[in-house]
Amino acid sequence: MKGESDVTLTAFSVVLGTLGLQGLTLGPLLRALDLRDDDPVGHEVGAARERALRAGLATFELDRSPVAEAVRQEFIAHLGAIDANPEEGEARRFAHGDLHRQALQAARHTVLAMRASDEIGDDAFHQMEEELDWIEMAGGGQEEETEPKG
View 1 (cartoon, rainbow, N blue to C red):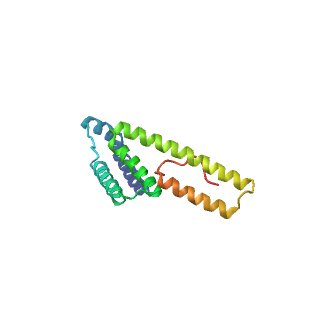
View 2 (view 1 turned 180 degrees about the horizontal axis):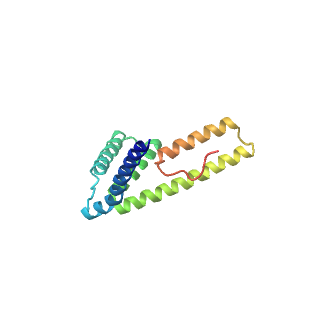
View 3 (view 1 turned 90 degrees about the vertical axis):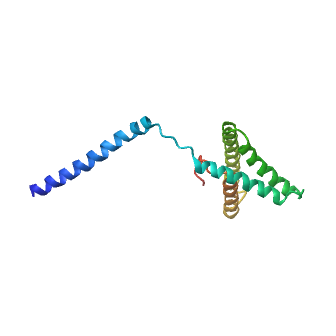
């Protein structure tokens, strides 16, 4: 029995020591080597996004309907974030996301208030909730949700 516990303790110590040594030295080693990731995938995604948005704009270039104009403005806004310098584009995306999140939050509060005051029933509430979810996803819903949905 004692032999088994010695083997187990030794194995545990080796594993813990190995992982601890690697874990404690990996960060300083990476800093010392000064390794950098130029984000090649991010550059490729940016180029693909720009080309895709421009191709999308070209499909309805001659259409001057109100719907086409709304979609055109949306695509141009996304292209504007690409065309700007990276810091300015990031600031613009952050401002857009913040404004979009605030508007959706106000819309959700209004729908919740309408449900609480029995102006709308559960079916209408759930349909509106779904529509607001779609708007959130269409507007870049990668932002974290600020409060749970009710």
